[in-house]
Amino acid sequence: MPRAKLIDAQPIPSTRDGRAKLSDAQPVNDTPPPALQMPHPELQKVFNPKPALDKVSDTLQGLGAGALSTAHNIGKLVYPDALANRITGPEDPAKTEALLGAHNTTQKIAKGAEQTGEFLLPGAAEERGAAKLAEFAPRLGKAAAPLARIATSALSSGAVNAAQGGSPVTGAAMGAGGQVLGQGMKAAAPIIAETALGLPKAARAFGKTPGLALLNETSGIRPSTIAESAQGRLGELTPELEREAASSSTPASLLPARGIVGDAMNKAADQNAEGLFNQLGKQGDFLNYGGTSGEVSPKKLLDLKRGFNEEHLRWNPEMHDRALSTGRKAYNALDQELDRTVPQAADLNQRISSLIPVAQRAESVSRNAPTLQRAAQRFGAHTGALTLGAIGGYQGYREGGVPGAVAGSLTGVLAPELIASPEGQMALARTLNKARGLTPLVGAALQFDRKRDNQ
Image (cartoon, rainbow, N blue to C red; front, side, top):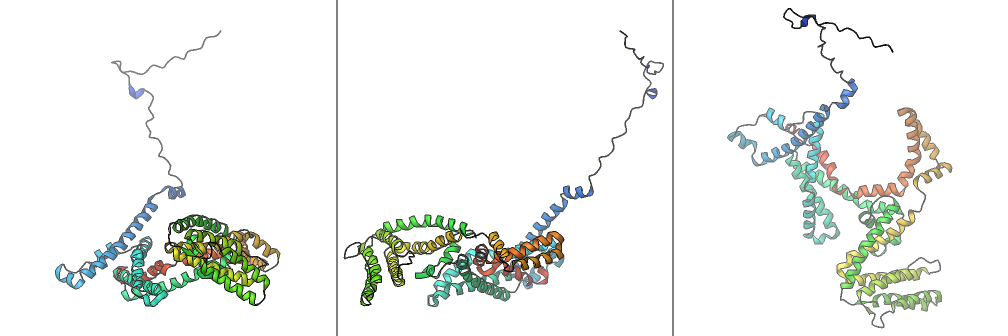
């Protein structure tokens, strides 16, 4: 077996004294490694935090400038320029501008947002003031509350606008105008909400307010979501009403309801209307509970009211209109008697009575065809959906090519259905219901009413 051939090692050159001669040895590579290459310029933009930090800094500076500007203007009311010039001397405009001014777009937006937000600060106090002011004008009746809100909104907006360096008169006028417009929009919201679900006129009988119940007691814009939230709310309010009724010791009477049905029976007998008389007789038999005195406990009255509704107020094609009308009047008498004997539960009773038709109607509407299906039906029925889709597609293609054409076509087909759908109308109603004086819009508009040195 052959042996490996060893390679002779090269001797290291040395000096006479035997030390290694480094100059003759192999050179050592002490060249530093090449510098790290910087990433692509586009990547540098992504990973460079400076622009984002600058935005944050400008935003904070703009917010601070807005707050300091308001404090500065309030200080001028306490320590006016005429007095300052005599005692401490006039202020330096350059320093004031550096401290209170907004010097770029981000700072201006942030300062404007802060100044607009200041108009929201008196919100709770403004509401309490309006409620207190309305108490001093009972003769105005239902107009007292809205007029008080207009007055307090004008006072609040005028004061904030003056504190920000604007005119108190302009601020007051804008605040009052915004409150008037906001109340008008808010008043329209319940009507739009009722239209969204198609609530019948009977749902508003006897002082019920289903539109307000829709907006204040339920959530969501889809009928199924509204129905679910309405049932959940009823599940909370109903036991509370039952507890209040059970705790009342005031006796209730069935005589007012009996009298309504009895008078209708007498008229039917005089007219020899046997069918109507018999239907009214069933209502009278139901109300004969408790003997001749007609006296029952409030809790029993509540149970009888619910039973009367189930037995005699459900729609029946064989029931006479006059019998149904009489039944509703008798039911209202039971309702009023419950409010009399359990006054602390009157508000609960009103809310529940208004919420019941909302829950029933929302559950019914939720079974209708969804928006996409209705749009497809309109498209297939040649009702003009194709024309609207073609117009939308053409305009979209001009703006954004093929993607724009697709988006425009879908918008042209779906937009009419979305606007007319329960979801679209409920979204509008909830938006209008939150108008509340349009304070943010008023505050933003009043930013144009500023002295030049406060910009």
